[in-house]
Structure formats: C-alpha cells, structure tokens
Image (cartoon, rainbow, N blue to C red; front, side, top):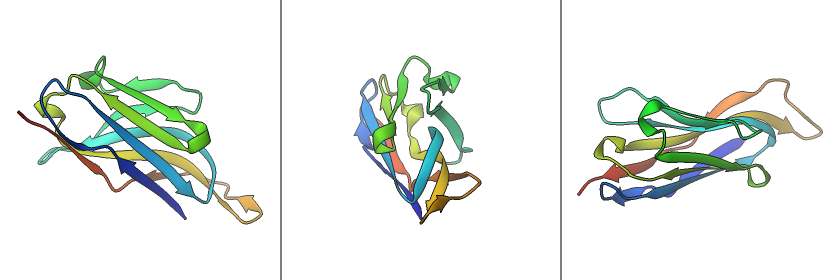
Length: 125
C-alpha cells in the first residue's frame, strides 16, 4: 500500500510565500516523476509542476518564475516553494507520484499514479 501525505498549506496574503511538502510512504520499489497539481473552485484540475527523478522540472506558464519544485529521493519527498502568490493561486494542491510498488521479495512490473489528499492554499488580503 502506498500513501502520499501533503503538508504546508494555509492562508497567506498576496505577494507572500508558502512551501508545500509531500512524502510518499509504504510499499515503494521506485518513484519516477513527481509533481503537484491544483484545483480551484469551479475550475478544472491543472498540473502545476513536475520533476523527474533526475531533477528535470517543468511548470505551467502561470507559475513560471514564482514556483520552484524540488525533491529528496532519499526521503521519497517532493516540495513546492511558492513565492509572489496571487489570489488566483488559491486552490487545493495535490501532490502526485508515479510509483512502482513493491511486495515482499519483489516488485510489480507496472508503475501507477498516486495522489495525496490535498492541502488548501488560500491567497487573500
């Protein structure tokens, strides 16, 4: 069984910063891509940032230059440093990871996408 748990959300004023953290745990053989997506009220979920296990990153245009994704492979963790926050960044943020699960004595052949439960980020005066 695999779990992703996020932390670090909250209320911040426009122009402020927040750092989101997410740790994967459980029966994990390997993790390839990790990332963050978000869903604002009444809007479609969008992918915000991704990072490969080699450290290659990608961002949606609206957060480029303001958000930074990073990961710690030893801790199976991914982070999202958010700066210059805007009211339109308000959303529930979900971490995601492409994980190859393990079992006693081996690993599954396939890898699957997993998501955390989400953490609320509210940007408001």
